[in-house]
Amino acid sequence: MKALQYRTVGAAPEVVTVPDPEPGPGQVLLKVTAAGVCHSDIAVMSWPAEGFPYELPLTLGHEGVGTVAALGAGVTGLKEGDPVAVYGPWGCGTCANCAQGKENYCLRADELGIRPPGLGAPGSMAEYMIVDDPRHLVPIDGLDPVATVPLTDAGLTPYHAIKRSLPKLVPGSTAVVIGTGGLGHVAIQLLRAMTAARVVALDVTEDKLALARTVGAHEAILSDKEAAAKVRELTGGRGAEAVFDFVGVQPTVETAGAIAAVEGDVTLVGIGGGTLPVGFGATNFEVSVTAPYWGSRGELIEVLDLARAGAVSVHTETYSLDDAPLAYERLHDGKINGRAVILPNG
Image 1 (tube, rainbow, N blue to C red):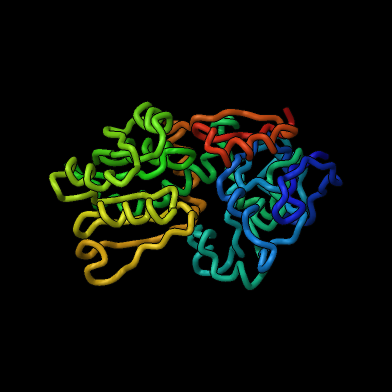
Image 2 (image 1 turned 30 degrees about the vertical axis):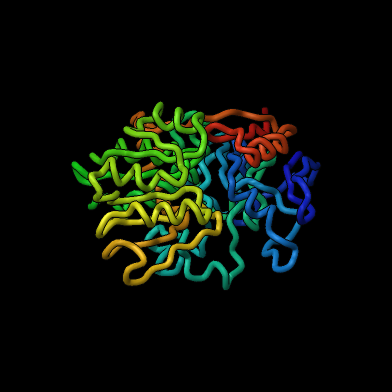
């Protein structure tokens, strides 16, 4: 079968031919319908050889939707042809966090060498992929695969982040979304669907701000040196009750800290390497700063339910598997407006 692999540190990913996988006991073979392209992959491919955490070659893709192609011995509850989405942050399934569905915070994953697909385990950018356990598959029940696949990360991750701040996003409050690309434009929709807050979007290009307005932002502001002052002005000097930074570079993190209101939340989702000092006087009083990771299995089901209700949709552009390297080039250059989706089987 064909697969998109990261084969050499520092090199571009390549489309190669690899052996067809076969499911072992307890595993599921998935014929991949759609696979999402994510900035996290670019971050992985930018890491230096020293200390690189994964074995190469690595089949990319941590967002996946497909149909069940074969079942390993002992698998029940699924049948061939079932359309499903892959829950990506795999855990051990038995620790205290996994028992709550919070496999994104599995207590034993590192110890046991458990890796997510595309981030250590073979991923979804292939004609077929192995899913380690049927609990990591969620029925999509009639949802469009292309529209659904980004929700497994670009929907789940902001949903998980926003749920934590819901008690603060009451009528009269303000939520700021920094970075309105793949995850950010979904976050805007989630905030509009789940809260009464005024939603303010920040980004560096007018194209991204236009997308933000299209999906529901009340205000859209260029993310520059004046952005914090503009948000302060919009809020009468109070600042935002919740700030979600989907970029995470130092300038955006500093902006996030500068616009958080007293008792506000700063949530750093982007993995750009920026840090925000925490201490008396470093931010407004009692500001909470957190850096979440993905979301729980139950939250993925909730995100898909929101999609069924028409509350959230993802702006996508599609590519063949052969054109997947081009999709990564365009993402790296900031030319993807929304989310790129690979169609491994056409």
